[in-house]
Image 1 (cartoon, rainbow, N blue to C red):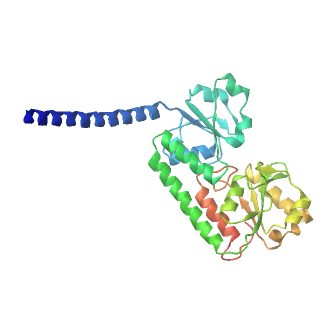
Image 2: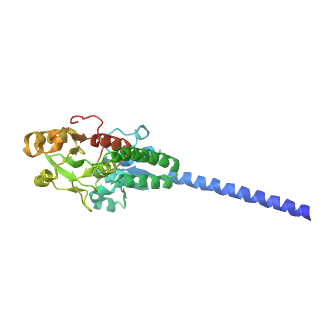
Image 3: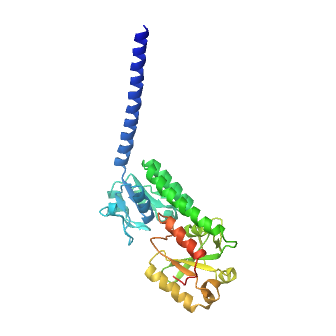
Length: 301
Protein backbone atom coordinates (compact mmCIF):
# COMPACT_ATOMS: atom_id res chain seq x y z
CA UNK A 1 0.00 0.00 0.00
CA UNK A 2 2.83 2.34 0.84
CA UNK A 3 4.30 1.78 -2.61
CA UNK A 4 0.96 2.45 -4.23
CA UNK A 5 0.53 5.69 -2.26
CA UNK A 6 4.04 6.79 -3.20
CA UNK A 7 3.34 6.20 -6.89
CA UNK A 8 0.03 8.07 -6.59
CA UNK A 9 1.76 11.05 -4.99
CA UNK A 10 4.41 11.09 -7.72
CA UNK A 11 1.75 10.96 -10.44
CA UNK A 12 -0.21 13.75 -8.73
CA UNK A 13 2.93 15.90 -8.47
CA UNK A 14 3.67 15.39 -12.17
CA UNK A 15 0.08 16.33 -13.06
CA UNK A 16 0.30 19.52 -10.98
CA UNK A 17 3.65 20.53 -12.51
CA UNK A 18 2.42 19.85 -16.05
CA UNK A 19 -0.77 21.77 -15.31
CA UNK A 20 1.18 24.75 -14.00
CA UNK A 21 3.47 24.77 -17.04
CA UNK A 22 0.48 24.48 -19.33
CA UNK A 23 -1.12 27.45 -17.56
CA UNK A 24 2.01 29.55 -18.10
CA UNK A 25 2.16 28.47 -21.73
CA UNK A 26 -1.49 29.33 -22.34
CA UNK A 27 -1.04 32.65 -20.55
CA UNK A 28 1.90 33.54 -22.78
CA UNK A 29 0.00 32.51 -25.89
CA UNK A 30 -2.89 34.69 -24.75
CA UNK A 31 -0.58 37.65 -24.22
CA UNK A 32 1.03 37.06 -27.61
CA UNK A 33 -2.37 36.85 -29.30
CA UNK A 34 -3.46 40.06 -27.56
CA UNK A 35 -0.39 41.84 -28.91
CA UNK A 36 -0.89 40.35 -32.36
CA UNK A 37 -4.54 41.46 -32.47
CA UNK A 38 -3.78 44.95 -31.15
CA UNK A 39 -3.91 47.54 -33.91
CA UNK A 40 -2.44 50.66 -32.36
CA UNK A 41 -2.52 54.14 -33.88
CA UNK A 42 -0.28 56.86 -32.42
CA UNK A 43 -1.40 60.36 -33.40
CA UNK A 44 1.50 62.27 -31.79
CA UNK A 45 5.26 61.97 -32.08
CA UNK A 46 5.63 61.60 -28.31
CA UNK A 47 3.45 58.47 -28.39
CA UNK A 48 5.48 57.13 -31.33
CA UNK A 49 8.64 57.54 -29.26
CA UNK A 50 7.14 55.61 -26.34
CA UNK A 51 5.94 52.83 -28.66
CA UNK A 52 9.38 52.60 -30.25
CA UNK A 53 11.06 52.36 -26.85
CA UNK A 54 8.69 49.53 -25.93
CA UNK A 55 9.17 47.87 -29.35
CA UNK A 56 5.44 48.06 -29.86
CA UNK A 57 4.00 47.58 -33.38
CA UNK A 58 1.89 50.41 -34.79
CA UNK A 59 -0.51 50.55 -37.72
CA UNK A 60 -0.66 54.36 -37.86
CA UNK A 61 1.69 57.24 -37.04
CA UNK A 62 1.33 61.04 -37.32
CA UNK A 63 2.39 63.05 -40.34
CA UNK A 64 5.35 64.99 -38.96
CA UNK A 65 8.67 66.56 -39.91
CA UNK A 66 10.31 64.61 -37.09
CA UNK A 67 12.23 61.49 -38.04
CA UNK A 68 9.97 58.46 -37.65
CA UNK A 69 11.78 55.41 -36.14
CA UNK A 70 12.89 52.80 -38.69
CA UNK A 71 10.42 50.17 -37.44
CA UNK A 72 7.57 52.49 -38.51
CA UNK A 73 9.05 53.69 -41.80
CA UNK A 74 6.32 52.06 -43.89
CA UNK A 75 3.43 52.53 -41.46
CA UNK A 76 0.44 54.59 -42.63
CA UNK A 77 0.52 58.33 -41.90
CA UNK A 78 -2.65 59.65 -40.25
CA UNK A 79 -2.22 63.41 -40.45
CA UNK A 80 -1.25 66.29 -38.20
CA UNK A 81 -1.43 65.55 -34.44
CA UNK A 82 -3.73 68.54 -33.88
CA UNK A 83 -6.05 67.54 -36.73
CA UNK A 84 -5.65 63.83 -37.54
CA UNK A 85 -7.39 62.27 -40.54
CA UNK A 86 -10.36 60.45 -39.03
CA UNK A 87 -11.23 58.65 -42.28
CA UNK A 88 -7.69 57.34 -42.60
CA UNK A 89 -7.61 56.20 -38.97
CA UNK A 90 -10.96 54.44 -39.32
CA UNK A 91 -9.75 52.59 -42.42
CA UNK A 92 -6.93 51.06 -40.37
CA UNK A 93 -9.49 49.37 -38.08
CA UNK A 94 -7.62 50.33 -34.89
CA UNK A 95 -8.19 48.64 -31.55
CA UNK A 96 -6.86 51.76 -29.81
CA UNK A 97 -5.97 55.31 -30.87
CA UNK A 98 -3.55 57.21 -28.66
CA UNK A 99 -3.23 60.97 -28.31
CA UNK A 100 -2.25 63.20 -25.37
CA UNK A 101 -4.37 65.04 -22.81
CA UNK A 102 -3.16 68.46 -24.00
CA UNK A 103 -4.86 67.81 -27.37
CA UNK A 104 -8.06 66.35 -25.96
CA UNK A 105 -10.14 69.35 -27.03
CA UNK A 106 -9.03 68.86 -30.64
CA UNK A 107 -10.86 65.55 -31.00
CA UNK A 108 -14.50 66.28 -31.77
CA UNK A 109 -17.62 64.89 -33.38
CA UNK A 110 -15.84 63.31 -36.35
CA UNK A 111 -14.32 60.65 -34.09
CA UNK A 112 -17.60 59.94 -32.31
CA UNK A 113 -19.38 59.55 -35.64
CA UNK A 114 -16.86 56.89 -36.54
CA UNK A 115 -17.30 55.27 -33.10
CA UNK A 116 -13.66 55.91 -32.29
CA UNK A 117 -12.82 56.85 -28.71
CA UNK A 118 -9.19 58.05 -28.54
CA UNK A 119 -7.23 57.24 -25.40
CA UNK A 120 -5.48 60.33 -24.05
CA UNK A 121 -2.13 59.79 -22.36
CA UNK A 122 -1.07 62.22 -19.65
CA UNK A 123 2.39 63.48 -20.63
CA UNK A 124 2.36 66.81 -18.80
CA UNK A 125 5.28 65.91 -16.52
CA UNK A 126 8.19 63.54 -16.14
CA UNK A 127 6.30 61.64 -13.43
CA UNK A 128 3.24 61.07 -15.63
CA UNK A 129 5.52 60.06 -18.50
CA UNK A 130 7.10 57.35 -16.34
CA UNK A 131 3.68 56.20 -15.16
CA UNK A 132 2.45 55.98 -18.77
CA UNK A 133 5.50 53.98 -19.84
CA UNK A 134 5.03 51.54 -16.95
CA UNK A 135 1.30 51.13 -17.61
CA UNK A 136 1.80 50.51 -21.34
CA UNK A 137 4.64 48.13 -20.58
CA UNK A 138 2.30 45.99 -18.48
CA UNK A 139 -0.56 46.24 -20.95
CA UNK A 140 1.51 45.07 -23.92
CA UNK A 141 3.83 42.67 -22.07
CA UNK A 142 6.82 44.97 -22.39
CA UNK A 143 7.69 45.27 -18.69
CA UNK A 144 11.41 44.82 -19.21
CA UNK A 145 11.60 47.53 -21.90
CA UNK A 146 9.45 49.83 -19.75
CA UNK A 147 11.67 49.33 -16.70
CA UNK A 148 14.80 50.15 -18.70
CA UNK A 149 13.21 53.32 -20.05
CA UNK A 150 12.07 54.49 -16.59
CA UNK A 151 15.46 53.64 -15.04
CA UNK A 152 17.17 55.85 -17.62
CA UNK A 153 14.94 58.80 -16.72
CA UNK A 154 15.41 58.18 -12.98
CA UNK A 155 19.19 58.22 -13.45
CA UNK A 156 19.06 61.65 -15.13
CA UNK A 157 16.73 62.98 -12.44
CA UNK A 158 19.17 61.94 -9.73
CA UNK A 159 22.09 63.55 -11.57
CA UNK A 160 20.43 66.94 -12.08
CA UNK A 161 19.08 67.04 -8.54
CA UNK A 162 22.59 66.41 -7.22
CA UNK A 163 23.84 69.38 -9.27
CA UNK A 164 21.07 71.64 -7.96
CA UNK A 165 21.73 70.66 -4.33
CA UNK A 166 25.23 72.10 -4.62
CA UNK A 167 23.79 75.60 -5.11
CA UNK A 168 22.17 77.67 -2.41
CA UNK A 169 20.00 79.80 -4.70
CA UNK A 170 17.67 78.71 -7.46
CA UNK A 171 17.86 80.74 -10.69
CA UNK A 172 14.62 82.51 -11.63
CA UNK A 173 13.38 81.15 -14.93
CA UNK A 174 10.89 82.48 -17.49
CA UNK A 175 9.54 79.95 -20.01
CA UNK A 176 7.97 81.16 -23.25
CA UNK A 177 6.13 79.03 -25.79
CA UNK A 178 6.32 80.64 -29.21
CA UNK A 179 3.40 80.54 -31.63
CA UNK A 180 3.45 81.35 -35.35
CA UNK A 181 2.23 84.88 -35.88
CA UNK A 182 4.60 86.83 -33.61
CA UNK A 183 2.88 85.72 -30.43
CA UNK A 184 3.75 83.58 -27.43
CA UNK A 185 2.36 82.15 -24.20
CA UNK A 186 4.00 81.79 -20.79
CA UNK A 187 4.55 78.22 -19.57
CA UNK A 188 3.86 77.73 -15.87
CA UNK A 189 5.04 75.10 -13.41
CA UNK A 190 2.13 72.92 -14.60
CA UNK A 191 3.65 72.56 -18.09
CA UNK A 192 6.12 69.87 -19.12
CA UNK A 193 9.02 72.30 -19.59
CA UNK A 194 8.07 73.91 -16.29
CA UNK A 195 8.36 70.47 -14.71
CA UNK A 196 11.82 70.00 -16.26
CA UNK A 197 12.90 73.32 -14.74
CA UNK A 198 11.52 72.33 -11.34
CA UNK A 199 13.33 68.97 -11.34
CA UNK A 200 16.57 70.59 -12.48
CA UNK A 201 16.40 73.04 -9.58
CA UNK A 202 15.07 76.23 -11.16
CA UNK A 203 12.33 78.57 -9.91
CA UNK A 204 9.62 79.26 -12.48
CA UNK A 205 8.70 82.95 -12.13
CA UNK A 206 5.10 82.17 -13.15
CA UNK A 207 3.16 79.48 -11.34
CA UNK A 208 -0.41 78.22 -11.46
CA UNK A 209 -2.51 75.63 -9.68
CA UNK A 210 -4.27 74.45 -12.82
CA UNK A 211 -3.08 76.17 -16.02
CA UNK A 212 -0.15 74.97 -18.12
CA UNK A 213 0.02 78.20 -20.14
CA UNK A 214 -1.05 81.77 -19.39
CA UNK A 215 -1.20 84.99 -21.41
CA UNK A 216 1.88 87.22 -21.30
CA UNK A 217 2.04 90.42 -19.29
CA UNK A 218 4.97 92.78 -19.84
CA UNK A 219 4.71 94.43 -16.42
CA UNK A 220 4.64 91.07 -14.64
CA UNK A 221 7.64 89.86 -16.65
CA UNK A 222 9.65 92.99 -15.81
CA UNK A 223 8.75 92.63 -12.15
CA UNK A 224 9.82 88.96 -12.13
CA UNK A 225 13.33 89.82 -13.39
CA UNK A 226 14.12 86.33 -14.74
CA UNK A 227 17.76 85.29 -14.73
CA UNK A 228 17.22 82.61 -17.39
CA UNK A 229 14.77 82.63 -20.30
CA UNK A 230 13.82 79.41 -22.09
CA UNK A 231 12.02 79.85 -25.42
CA UNK A 232 10.12 76.79 -26.62
CA UNK A 233 9.77 76.78 -30.41
CA UNK A 234 7.08 74.10 -30.39
CA UNK A 235 5.50 74.68 -33.80
CA UNK A 236 7.31 75.83 -36.97
CA UNK A 237 10.66 76.73 -35.34
CA UNK A 238 11.92 78.27 -38.61
CA UNK A 239 9.23 80.91 -38.15
CA UNK A 240 8.97 81.11 -34.36
CA UNK A 241 12.69 81.56 -33.53
CA UNK A 242 13.16 84.53 -35.91
CA UNK A 243 10.00 86.03 -34.38
CA UNK A 244 11.50 85.69 -30.93
CA UNK A 245 14.79 87.21 -32.10
CA UNK A 246 13.01 90.18 -33.67
CA UNK A 247 10.92 90.80 -30.55
CA UNK A 248 13.94 90.62 -28.23
CA UNK A 249 15.84 93.00 -30.52
CA UNK A 250 13.19 95.66 -31.01
CA UNK A 251 11.14 95.56 -27.79
CA UNK A 252 13.06 97.52 -25.11
CA UNK A 253 11.32 95.56 -22.32
CA UNK A 254 13.41 92.47 -22.98
CA UNK A 255 16.67 94.39 -22.78
CA UNK A 256 15.96 95.31 -19.16
CA UNK A 257 15.93 91.68 -17.97
CA UNK A 258 18.95 90.02 -16.31
CA UNK A 259 18.63 86.96 -18.56
CA UNK A 260 19.04 89.08 -21.70
CA UNK A 261 21.78 91.27 -20.22
CA UNK A 262 23.78 88.18 -19.21
CA UNK A 263 23.12 86.28 -22.48
CA UNK A 264 21.19 83.49 -20.77
CA UNK A 265 18.41 83.09 -23.32
CA UNK A 266 18.03 79.61 -24.80
CA UNK A 267 15.85 78.12 -27.52
CA UNK A 268 14.23 74.74 -26.90
CA UNK A 269 13.66 72.80 -30.10
CA UNK A 270 12.60 69.31 -31.14
CA UNK A 271 13.42 66.51 -30.79
CA UNK A 272 14.85 67.13 -27.30
CA UNK A 273 12.03 69.47 -26.29
CA UNK A 274 8.30 69.56 -26.90
CA UNK A 275 5.12 70.82 -25.26
CA UNK A 276 4.53 67.33 -23.86
CA UNK A 277 6.87 64.85 -22.20
CA UNK A 278 8.63 62.37 -24.46
CA UNK A 279 11.43 59.82 -24.52
CA UNK A 280 14.03 62.60 -24.79
CA UNK A 281 13.25 63.57 -21.18
CA UNK A 282 16.60 62.28 -19.88
CA UNK A 283 18.60 64.41 -22.31
CA UNK A 284 16.27 67.38 -21.86
CA UNK A 285 16.88 67.32 -18.10
CA UNK A 286 20.64 67.35 -18.61
CA UNK A 287 20.43 70.26 -21.06
CA UNK A 288 18.20 72.35 -18.77
CA UNK A 289 20.48 71.59 -15.81
CA UNK A 290 23.51 72.85 -17.76
CA UNK A 291 21.65 76.05 -18.63
CA UNK A 292 20.56 76.68 -15.05
CA UNK A 293 23.91 75.79 -13.50
CA UNK A 294 26.55 76.24 -16.22
CA UNK A 295 30.09 75.21 -15.40
CA UNK A 296 31.21 77.94 -17.76
CA UNK A 297 29.22 80.99 -18.78
CA UNK A 298 27.76 80.47 -22.24
CA UNK A 299 26.06 82.83 -24.68
CA UNK A 300 22.56 82.59 -26.10
CA UNK A 301 21.69 79.54 -28.16
